[in-house]
Length: 539
Image 1: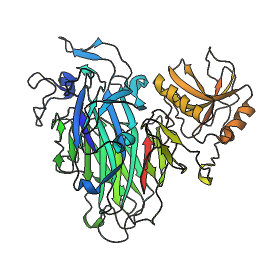
Image 2 (image 1 turned 90 degrees about the vertical axis):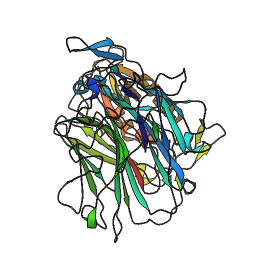
Image 3 (image 1 turned 90 degrees about the horizontal axis):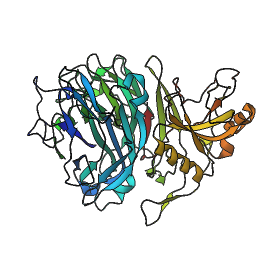
Image 4 (image 1 turned 30 degrees about the vertical axis):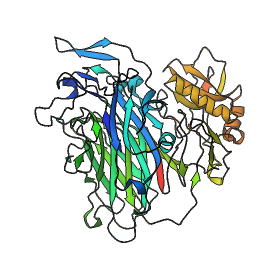
């Protein structure tokens, strides 16, 4: 994983492009700093840019088969300041779309625009409105695999963030998570989650399943994370870990990350700062990214034949917003299988899937008590993607229907009615909900390519776009179409929304619907994986 921050203090020679390296008791927090965009590239098409290098040992033996780009920032408005009366004030209240960034790959002289999918936006979530963090994701595997050389300098530009001074501090950055094949290395199980977890007073557990460690020998494992809002001088952030053969959680740490301050505004790999980036601040003022080995003496934490593990996030002083984590462990080598290409619809971006043998997805949704519930489903295998000469155009063959994806849906009961003046009375089958308009439009286009007629309406209660695939005057007709998986055309999550009508009873939603209808856990399909690898999502 390579990463960098995209905003920095301008206190070092009056330029945010200069590295900020103070890590002692005198270090400032980001809300004490005048945060400005880093912009290293001398390119007039970008207002922000920073870079990082991908360098691996024995690169000739390694084949990149997955690359996922994440960018995240606190973004309640364009700019803020601290007044003479020591009050935070808004200088510019504008807040514009943040779903498009630029990427320049190794050995390239020009940028490519990348449109991402929204994972989370706190702007309309009451407890996050002050800092309004957002998280975006884009699958850039095709770009990387089609490049002349995937190893070298990656530059990301035009990530949006609040600048100046705001309550809680401005923080922003990006990370690219790579998966590679190397026949000289041991077999690994890799699972990765993305989403949003705002950790304050309540802890969060993330469960890793679907693997079995080696029956004998030492077990080696690693954790990767990316997060906003961890501070060097505010302690309390913790990562704890346990497996099914251990009774208690163990606090994770290494030489750079204390047990009580794991998220400490730094970018590191194991026990070393990751300095192959520009700028290469050792204090990134609210952006964390790291890969860390789990200390497992005598297999005391992760034993032989272990099949489950849990990562716990908690804090007692600071707060942090984690949006990515991955777990890698040595496992029993599976029987040899033929590599396939998966062709499943993504929900909001125009990136393409890559090679996989198995892919699973977990969605974790937040309850009123700030605890979590977890759901899991399998995603079908399909015929290979056929690429033409234009890397931005991909032709997909029709997926095979297997017993895995013959989905039996949860029975829906007629829901409380929502009043929307622009719509006719009826029962609307909802496939997805979006805060960013362009994401809704792209998702509709994907559905239309599947032969599914779709449209969206705006719910005035939250200003979100609700993508619906049909509407019915009769609830039984809507329920029948819902249970048929749209006559076998769609196996993603659906729910029935009652509009401008009197309900008969409370609804039982599919597992993706949260208790707060203003923040639906967006119905993203997993897109990429490798042999013995899973991608999962929490929110």
